[in-house]
Image (cartoon, rainbow, N blue to C red; front, side, top):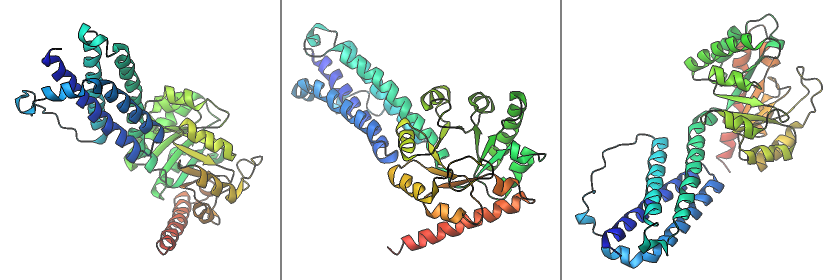
Length: 357
């Protein structure tokens, strides 16, 4: 076999192993994604093993000092997503090189070109999944504190944009628009205004149920019920940087939501709710069980007010969603601020007690 061919194989074997190891570590240590990490690890082991047939011969032809390509890379990557993209492309290009070389008579008996083609297409999908998770990570981190649902039915004659602005000034971290009363044109108009308001204040903006409105308004994400559009369908239609929340009422539903890739799980109803009088109350113990079982951020919902919001946070909720506790109050901003204070008070106590364990 020509020594030049061995040098090409050696260089691309190194690119494949090094690039995949970087992607594997991102999945394992930064995203805590065991499934993706294991897929990348298995891919790395299988590919390097198939090329190790030429190990001694390739190593014999390695000559880094004489490599004219050394030190010629000029591009710099300033963030993690661009690093993931760069390493994925590096591996994909290396796989294409080996795929083509494997068609040569000297190599076709040892290497199967189709194996490297399949690995390349598998990596395309894994690259998309990694980037999707990374780009949603910052939004997911914002799912903490008070989550205010702007329900137009509960608002009555109050203006939705004005109410949201007051809630944001009071300390709300997430605003969700829920509008089952008006036509899609009016809902979109409100969503666009809320999106602009939330952007200015670095507040997450979520649309309830309506995938088309979430897309048209460029919302940060969408919240759907367990019996609404399947999570897989919603995820397929949304841009990869948008988050999806899913309402659950049982432990099995919460576990399934995590498995299917929900970015956060709504658990409720925590208490009897004035907005959903027929909703089954699951209680604080159920919330604790969900917290023990799933690692996905949890938003507690249903009947939460100033008197019990501390209990919800103490039971493990990452955020507490409210409607009436804010929207039916005369002073929405003040009511929001009081709820935020209760959350902060309970969070500080929890951290303080945890530090003495």
